[in-house]
Length: 234
Ligand code: ATP
Image (cartoon, rainbow, N blue to C red; front, top):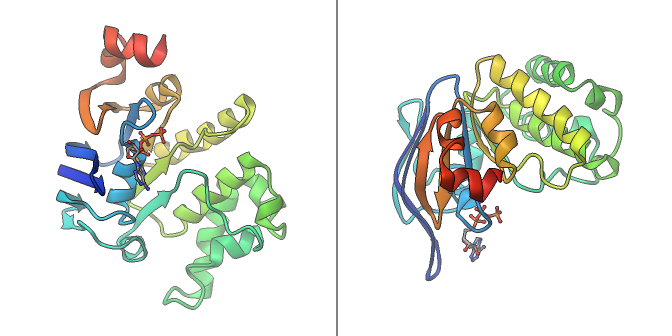
């Protein structure tokens, strides 16, 4: 579903991602783990069109989408949940969900149908649909950020650090929802600091070190390697 070949990305002289290859096969959940500064978020931002690659190619469902800006990628049904959630604080839950859709070529009935699916997945958002997003808890904001990405009916979802800053019980709720989304057949690329959590959920995993893939494979296999066990699971 998503294929990344020789992807490179820099910030001035700092090369954050180097010749990176990765694949998210149809319906699979792929985890991208690694230490701070390894280049995980830059990889997602570059795939999502927020950062221009300095080289390489990104294909979504066979279409070359390298360097295509985020707002156009949404039309090609790539969902992106940024690190830090980035909900629009002064708007309500429902307005956040509707924001990119109402009056933009998607009919009102279709927007409501998509919204209902988000509310089914996150009943808490339904209860709070008229609440200002800025007053939601961190976990609820994460649910809203995921719900907003689902509004484009993605064929592939990019998730950047969904557990960040959340209490363990809330992390469980958010990850239950991610498991549910995965079960529905959606292809997912998950960046996560919490390697144990990510490996538990993933079909396949890549470990990034200094912008390069250091190890990749089935979670059960790579979790057993000394480098991964000591550095990320120990
Ligand atoms: P973390 O888990 O801490 O978020 P990460 O693996 O997501 O780390 P990135 O945020 O992609 O790593 O950062 C990769 C490298 O690029 C780091 O050296 C970082 O300092 C650098 N970097 C990231 N964003 C910028 C920026 N806006 N300007 C300059 N350098 C940046």
